[in-house]
Image 1 (spheres, rainbow, N blue to C red):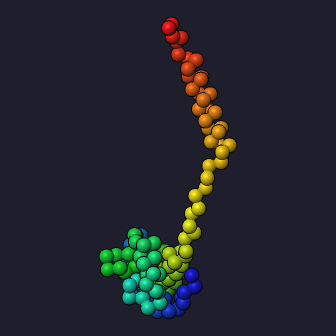
Image 2: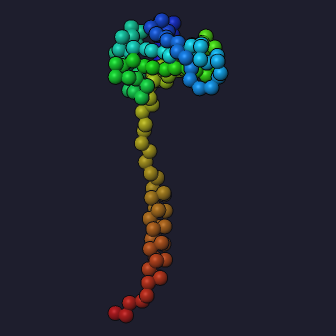
Length: 136
């Protein structure tokens, strides 16, 4: 699927928040964590079937309002985090829109079936030899 990345990026909403975790004074006063919001159903770039595929593929990342939420707090730089989260978003969308190959079920070869039945027969004979003889 070839999508217009610039148009898709223009539909994104960003929010900078304070990162969690250790980092001393810097982390307490600088909003370096970047949250990305993408309203899937309001997108003008994606077609209806593409929107459905994105919602299905990324259902664990989409909230009830059908807004995709991603974040990045890997770097101490807000600019780097924004670029990282945009790249993550584009990769996820590309994966979600990739057409799935239809699985063609394979047939079990006759030789494999025959060998399995022979092995079962051998095992059965082995077990039957362990039984005490019947006196009938």
